[in-house]
Length: 236
Length: 236
DNA sequence: GTACCTTTGTGAACCAATGCACAAAGTCAC
DNA sequence: GTGACTTTGTGCATTGGTTCACAAAGGTAC
Image (cartoon, rainbow over all chains, first blue to last red; front, side):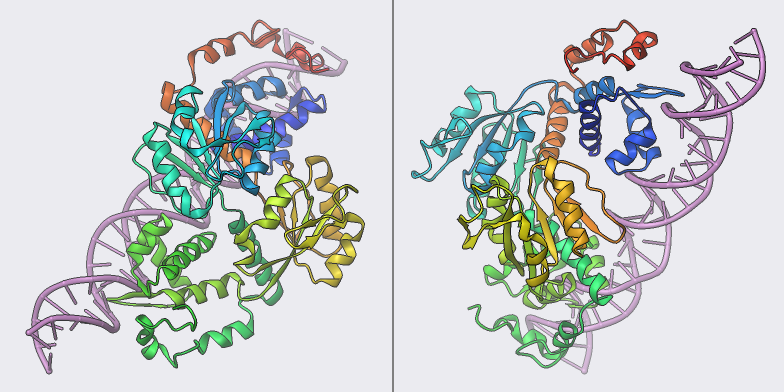
């Protein structure tokens, strides 16, 4: 389940505060979910709770970590050392959860050779050999959009089946390859959507009025005139 | 709907390549969803397609942008100018979609006053005045976990109702406030989970064996002895 | 040992979202 | 103008996930 990492984080917070036992109710509010859902999720891993008492925090942390495969050490390669790549390389949340950044790679000669987060940036040419020799099993793509598919092709060809993609493109991959996409602007767009709803109770009036007067055309019937000459001026 | 930003990005890609019309089928594969789902989503916005032809790309971009509230200019403040904050400030995807970074704020005197992405980092003390004077409507929290709730309290008190949280904590907010959380390590954990499944067909055997021998205790019945003295050694 | 209390684990109802399949609507060729 | 073809928009069945509610299980007090 995709919620296990959430529980894990809440549990780690409890463990740090020295709490040894937690009820499903308390853990649920900590993770921001329904308590019945949490119990059902946990019951899928096996019965690790004690009725009348709750769950042993440390034991549950261990069980979830094991289920998520965090008890083993995952070698991760980050391709693309721009601002985002740098932020990821320094991100503490990776190391603390069983992920080891095995390599930073970039195509830019300016960046290759510089040191970031205790690693020396390597040239993208070594991608395949790095993956092979350091047993990399997950690749993070933090390149510009234009380079992402090319990188993706190379890493899948090299046998990688798990990719975390930060580039704003939909990657096409062979069957059996997992791609998870993170788009930092999508979340903002969703917030803006809700914010707009709060303010105006719907689409704002100025924009709605403008919608009826689509620039360059008069009505629906004429709209498709613009099919060969795009209606929005200045994109030719 | 949360999928509109996805469609929007696919559409922008098509527009850049000069494509004027697209069928639901083509757009669906571009966005990685089912075509029927896409049509149903779009029909909720109104009937913007032409049967037998498809959708006018530019017109649809405009309609979705309007629905998402991207036709107006959103002022965003980023709190916490670490690696992640810097990456976000430089992230092109924000500006291109109607979001304007109105301010970068940090508590660290070392960082305050430096220039990033054409802005001068301001001190966190000015948080409230910045929000008020620049009409900030969305706040991005990219601080360390420990500082996030405090920042959150201050911005909600200042009237902010939309927060994008990158800090690895669950924020508690008053009713009516929207919080969206992005955790860069959760996606990685989900990948690791699937990767593990691929390799072993389930939980790996070493860990499974170890699970039956929870360190420090013998069996289930004794486990709760550890409630006051945590079973996993060295966390006191 | 017994009665009571707390909390888990789960059966069952419920709800929303998904995908199929097809009719309606429009285009294009001739 | 007519007929064949394409593509949208949507009714409907199905699926998956969420929540409720409660019995079973264990702990605790006396």
